[in-house]
Image (spheres, rainbow, N blue to C red):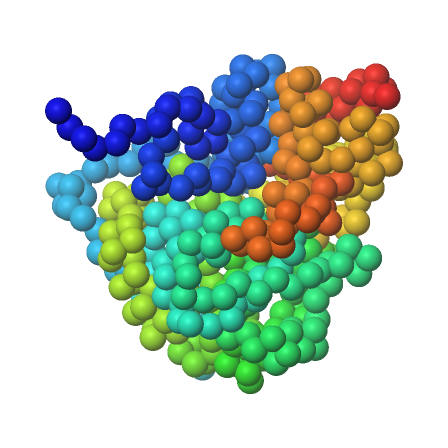
Length: 435
């Protein structure tokens, strides 16, 4: 008879009943996964007609007026049965480089090439490759920011994550001078940030973004910029220059400036299910990122990468962006006005993304914080995301202190307009009945 200890039976990770195993840790769910799981317990299924999912980090995927036709099928060729290269298909890498050069680097002597691009299977995959390539450094990250950064910054032990606080009172602004002070004062060798910011909607753009790139160049501090919402731009000055903002505009030398750009088809082309994303950076960095991909994920889908080439044509990309701006601009106005009318406080009208970041602090006491409102809204079949999930705390090093953003929630205007109207109507009834 075996003398090995049997697994203990009890409540396992995430509250799942079953045996516990000593070798495995409890892996927390990101904010969106948590809220979706809680909604599922109450009967939610993806696409359910009687639910309004304002927690989703996904844009509506149907055709929009003026947008290129949606791709609904693709051929699978004999060669597609093989692995794709870890760095991605060469023709897609060339198309991505050409997209940046044509739209943002005309007249500049230094141009991106295929060797400046690495393709991966999803945004988290791209982030993980970059994180695995970092050395023994201090890496600055902002509060609040994208929920998935928390586990990403916890898993890799070689670098030290250093939080940088953004202030609601300043509209979450962070200037080039602020960046210089943090880099020099904290000994930072890299900065990780979503731009436009998920969840606040703040955009570092124009002269401010040029200054950020200049500071990175001067101080040799890598800027790792998550630009997955860079086609959802609402600031008038940035809309006037083409409705897309990217650090690629301000890079002087593509192989010397320490600027790493992450983007993909997920949000900006509205094809999240394709899992086609990319990293654009100096060739030396791309070599390391690709090497990391060889042991982390092995590369993405060959047929989807091949089909993605046509989506990167600048004319197609700009047509899609203009359609997004027209349709999502209407939804932005409706959700922003509707939340304000209901008593929510908005620190900053979103300059980018498809989210409104709002505080429930002035609502009735029983729903005056993010988690309480989230739970009450679930009972009315509406999904939101409590703000505390965006208070990124790798390794839970802040000792369980209450989040600065416990009063906030993130509301998505990614879904169709009728879902936004349904959610606002249910919020109105919820607030009217709350104590």
